Image (cartoon, rainbow, N blue to C red; front, side):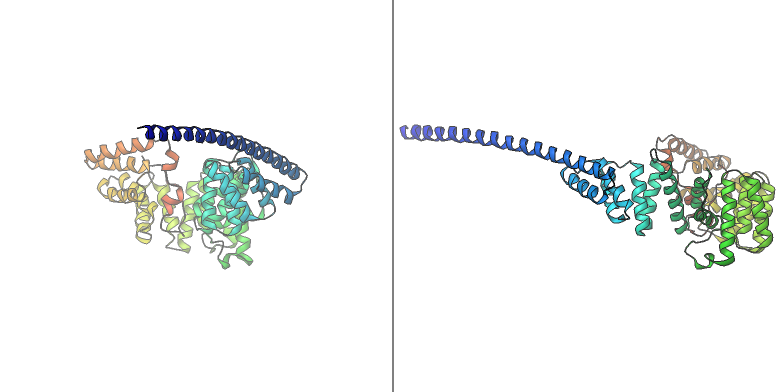
Length: 410
């Protein structure tokens, strides 16, 4: 027992000594850590000041070096990633700039301005799909306090949509660039290509007489975007007189006339396009859209032929369904609208149209279910994200078909 007490006393003394040593070690360690943190903070502030001063003095290489070193010490410094990214971008170091903007987006996922800059870097690097994704995100999230950057981002977004043959989206995007009076040859060419459904990477539309027509159409579209319809009409009238067989020229002219609310004249141009190309689905659907609720019997013929020629185009089925519904053929409308619903199960207006069709066909339970789904989707706070783009609704699975706005479903 005494041995045990002695052993216990010996170990107790050792434990006290060990504990005292640990406490002393921890005090020294925490002091060192605090001192190290203080040194790190001081070093970061010094590097930050040096980076900002070098940037102000236009010593860009020095600024980049200082920002890089500061960000090693504080990788959560969002302003630092922004500054580093813009410095690299200004020197055409697009890969390095893209890396900086990716870091910034990791810290601030809803920073639309950062998405815009990353998209522009990716555009320059030739990675179209990521660039398109980021520029669309920038358009959705918004670009803060930089009108010029917004214009640049929108223009490049339009070009990417053109390259992807998303002509309708490109048309809308580039019209937004032209709205405020922006003038440039590059913009005119892109607008002309969007209006005429021309792939910008196709060699046929890049030189000679075709290039002249494209540029002039682009100028007309820029005027139309600014609601200067008289000037736009003068250009189109001259062009259709000089080049009556230019592909999609009458179609583009008709679209402009629709913007000017000259529906009868627009239909005449669409018919002229069909005389040139009897299988021009886009013109058929434009006529069908104009005829909806005015002469739905006549519009129905065009929609039926469009569905026959382009069965993968959701807008064709949508117009066929709406026209059948308008002439009292609810049972014929339902399969078309149900097909569109399969493409876009989160599009509220499709359920509203289906609800009306079900009700007219006497399918009360289906009508109530469709209308309830419409109310649910329509009430979602994130409503804009649940709706597809015009391009998706009207051009899905058919990259070379035009995209247009249908009249709203009831």
